[in-house]
Length: 171
Image 1 (spheres, rainbow, N blue to C red):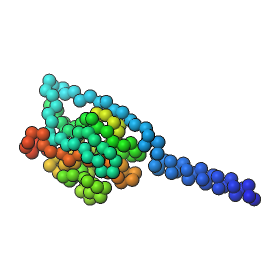
Image 2 (cartoon, rainbow, N blue to C red; image 1 turned 135 degrees about the horizontal axis):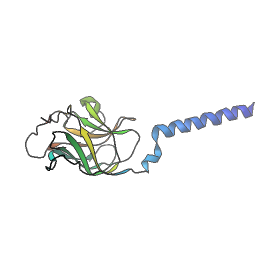
Image 3 (cartoon, rainbow, N blue to C red; image 1 turned 60 degrees about the vertical axis):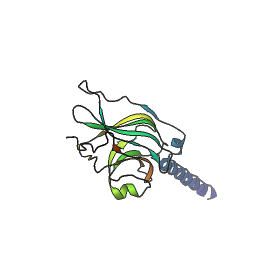
């Protein structure tokens, strides 16, 4: 009887360890994912035009770099991270937040956001497409957000690159 109970306890402990590992993914604290994407090419000879830019500040995890919104000749827009660095983690996404800044965890869901997708890497230059539904007069901040734990790693409030309000709908 003791042998059977021991086997059950070991099985339950193994399952608990696996579930905890999957939820927290602790190895990601030590494993970095590097990205080195180039600036997207345009179909014309004109270079992408910077519209908005901001510097990342840390919220819950050290985060640094620059986020810049560009428009290319066909009118489409993308956001580019340069000299970017943050912590790695499980289920980290890039959000455009409908607020002037996101200095804590509560401000992101309270303000509303658009999910641009999973982070490509926690270190390096990378690009994220902005759909036509991203109104830059409303979505003023970029957040590095962990969906699994509802945590704001860091944020970059955007300001106009030209000292004027950019045409934020892409028209």
